Every structure is written in structure tokens, then in C-alpha cells.
Amino acid sequence: MIFFIQYVRTLAALMVLISHISWKGEQYSTNPLSFFPFSGVGVALFVLMSGYLLIYIIETKEIGVVYFIKSRVKRILPLYWFFTTVALVIYLLFPDKVNSSGGVTYIWDSYTLLPTEGKYLLGNSWTLKYELFFYLILAFSLFFMKEIRYKIVVFILSALVLLGLFVDGLYLSFLTNPLLLEFILGIMIYQLHKKITISVQTGVILVVLALILSIFFTSLHLVDSYPKAIVGGIPGLLFFLGLLSFEPLFEKRNSDKSFFVLKKISISSYSLYLSQPFSLAFFAIILNKLGINEYGYTYVSLLLLFALITGYMVHILIEKRLVKVFQKKS
Image (tube, rainbow, N blue to C red):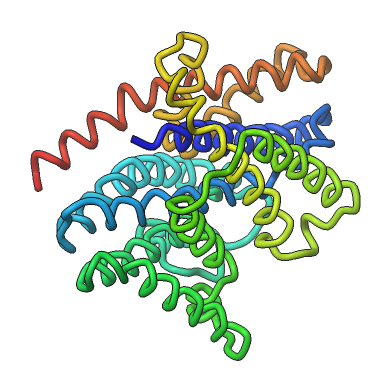
């Protein structure tokens, strides 16, 4: 078992959530988290984690192409379709409540996660299309020997990103997005970790450096003007390597009760990711009506708490049941 992954997942989930809480605060004229410098780092951590974890799976386990695709699809799509349908109902009843920042919302593209010129019903679901694309490339690599699978995946992803320097267009821009480089980094970190151990001292330095870079990018307002692979990917990579160095500590202390909450956030991270647009919007309205938005830190703390509780309840009451239903049908 890889123990550090669950804490990477927790950190990534919290970074994404706090970023969204910061944006929600902007809507209600209270944003004590405007300094928060990790808007793109959380996404980068999720992508790096996918590259690391999934290459580990296909290299260490006997797994067929069909089984792999079905298992990944069942992990991603049922809960995504559930919340997309919830968003669709809201969109049909109150069109201005979905993608209120403007732009055309595409329903078919939302369900299929096809690249679109407009917006999905779930605004934060754009990363999932890259996850599914990565799964397809991994599935293709299963036709080859275990020893060269990661090389096949790295070659395909690298070739696509390189192709992106010369081509353009909706689908080509998706297939060649520099974000794919973060999957490659996750894969290469796994291969490197099999040969080299990062000391805890080095890990601490890497985490501190990640914090400094994140603050630096934010203070210079580079987050929106530079590629996500740079402003989010570089600090994300340093955070990932730093947490990787703590693997012996995480393994030793894994059963400690002090890690209980972090583990719960980790296992419910996908439910948290998909449910937070709804939970934040709902509770922000309530807190605003109660006048709590005038107390900035109380406001964002309550939003954080309510979103985490909602994410965990969604995991227990909806996600786990959907997984069971789809497992029975397959």
C-alpha cells in the first residue's frame, strides 16, 4: 500500500476547496482568503497523483484492458452524472444559477465530457476529461509488456504535447494540452522512487520551496497569465515530492487517531470535489442571509466545515451506493 497518496489527495482536495471558497467570498464581498496562493496547485497534485498511482497499478497488478477501463469509468462517471443531472435540473429551472459568470452551457458535452467551446453544467469538471483521456492511453499500454508500459505512455503524452506546438483547434488543443506533462511527471516520479529515496529533511525543504513559489506566483499575479503547468505544476511537483519523502512516517503512523479526519477527507475527496459547487452556493446564501458574511474568517471557516461534511455525507450516502449498483450490473 502507498500511504502518502492519501495525504496528497487530502492536501489537493483542501487546496481546491479553499480556492473555491475564496472565489465564493468574492461574490459576497468578503474574502479574507484573497492571499491564498494555491488555486492551481491542488489540481496539479491530483494529476501528479493519477500519473504516479495508476502507473503503479498497471505495472504491479495483472489487469486486463476491459477490466481497467470499466473499473475507472465506474469510479468516475456515476457520481459525475448524478451531479450533472442535479445541475441540469437547476439549469432548466433557474438558468442564471448555473455558470452565472456567463458563457454558453452545453448539456450533451457535459454528460460526455467532450471538449467544448462553451461550459459544462459542472464548471469544475473540466479536469475529468483529461483523466478519462489518460485512462485510454493507459489502457492502450496494457497491450505491451509491464516493463515498457510506462515508456509507451510517456512517449504518447510527450508526442502529443510536442504536437501542440504546431497545431490548433478545439479537439487538438485538448489532446495536446501542456497539462498532460503533469501525468508524465507523476509517472517519472514513480520510476525514480523505485531507485532513489528522498530524505525527510529534503522533503521539508521541498515543501517550504513549494510554499514560497506559490506565494511568489500569486504576489506577481502570474496565476492567470502563465500556463497552469508552470504556476500550479511546479509548486505541485515540489509538494508531491515533499510528501513522498514522508512515506515511512505515514506508514508508521497510519493507524493513529490524529490522522482520522485527514483520512476521511481523502476517501471522500471525489465526492467533495463534485459536491462543493452546490454546498458552497447553498450555505453561502444561508450565511449571507444571517449576516455572517460580515465576519470574514467565521464565514469562510463555516463554508469549509459545511463543504467537508457535505462531501463526506455524499460519499457515504450516494457515491458508495452508486459504485455498488454499477458493480452489480457489470
